[in-house]
Length: 352
Image (cartoon, rainbow, N blue to C red; front, side, top):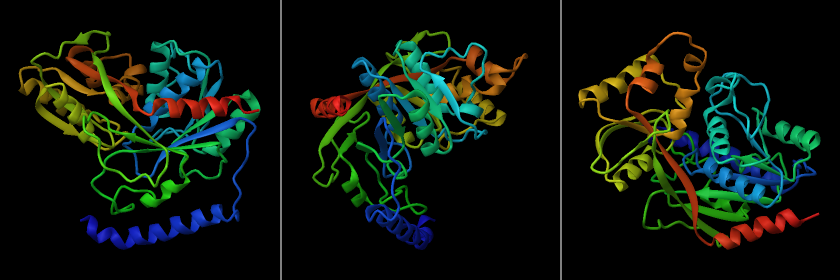
């Protein structure tokens, strides 16, 4: 079916080309901030690991004694107001939920809390340039990290980082998953190649840009009580709503998890009751096998209004508390050329 969308992809390519030329020729001038700006982005529509890399970057900046602010859009949230939250915010009054904050922001806060990361702010806003300007003037951070900022050229940046992962479709949106042609990475200062859970490096052209490789490492499978699932000779049902479900399946295969059923949903998906019941039924069909999902999906369900604000039992709570539901806790690691990356960050932090 996507072949019929190729004319629209060609039109989209023309629009992208004209827009980029407007910035390249300084017809449109980006906004300069007092804070240092690092953009972390990609050229495809999700699935490259931007948010885990942003987390890694923020923790490194804090370890260097600096104060970072992360700016995110908050995909699929229902409100469009700006929210500013400290990294160590506990959310004890359930003020933040998936609907008003977004799953990726909640995932970051959960990981920062668990790791006692330190001082930093997360700003969620539909308009990233407005959020960055507000954070720059109000909080005066050392560094502003723009999550998913490669195409957001309204903001000037001192370091442009682009993540690439293996893709089977090189067409532009809507026929494919690319936001820009592969040649656009000429604008990047550093290219991060994310091998995810693959042991073999995939072949990718990086336009002679400095190249760093990273991959994911599984820490463990964890449930809502913090209990760890042993994965020896494990059979399980799995589901996910992420941009690259194949990478999640690759993780389970690598951990020798026998998959009895694998359900996929769109990225940032809000699960309805019928879908939750379907997941539960899949587990019951296989004699109440463990259910494994991604941390992003787990955080989205756990922090939905239907769980946080409901005073009565419902299907969502049933799945979380009465079924063997676990999420894959992973972390990103730099596997090659790490020193080059950190040297560039150190250089940026020392600039006046």
